[in-house]
Amino acid sequence: MYDEPHRWLQAVENRILYVEKRLRGANPVVGLPYADGAVLFTVRPHGQQKVYEVYDRLALGGLGHPADVERLRMMAINLAHTEGFTRSAADVTLQRLLNFAIAPQVKSAFDEVFRSPVIAKFLMVELAHVGDDTRFFTLNFDGNFSSRDTFGIAAGTHQAEELMARRLEEHPPASDSLEDVLNAALMVWAVGHCVDAGSTEYDDPPMPSDEDLAAKLREAADKLEFEAAVLDRSSVSRAKFRGLGADDLASLHTLIDGLPGGDDA
Image (cartoon, rainbow, N blue to C red):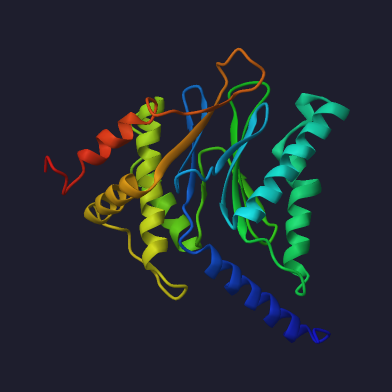
């Protein structure tokens, strides 16, 4: 059926549209560096975890179909621990895990048009073993991945990711403190959530207004649950992952209360 090149290309295009439609509206994940390491932030339905530890200095946040997210998460954990056992902890890097195992598996599932593709995106973060470097990796549903050291974003659509990146460039964290970085991550998340909730694949959506962001954040605070974790290089233990609790996230509710349209406005 797909022996003719144009038919295979059409099948691939159809798969892209299918996966993008399934991912539209998924809660974005934001990754930012802070003074002691890196933060992963998202908002989740109550009880559904989205941010996980992978290895001592590795963590990830996923969005998409829960079964696909879990399958890839377990693959990453198993590969990381196997690599750490057979080689050394210093050899466990996201570049190696993605290059030689995870990305090829995701690409294979996408390219084989008679198989179900992976309905998921990942944002992964790594602290360097030496120095203060932090790297964020974004893994797409077609097996492509990219990295940067300034921030990381994963959302359901590329329109949302572009506007989230623009928001971060225009409104960076006020400082590298954990509180200021979390506040910036929350506003970046809100941009992505607004865009994905209201756009279609044919839209060129504008940047949401402050009023739209405030309304979306109040809705999220009532119906959803903030989730964040850090890789803290100042930790004395070998494992640097730490989930943030209610006290760590209290400033986010204060920020939301002060947005336009709030009770005090």
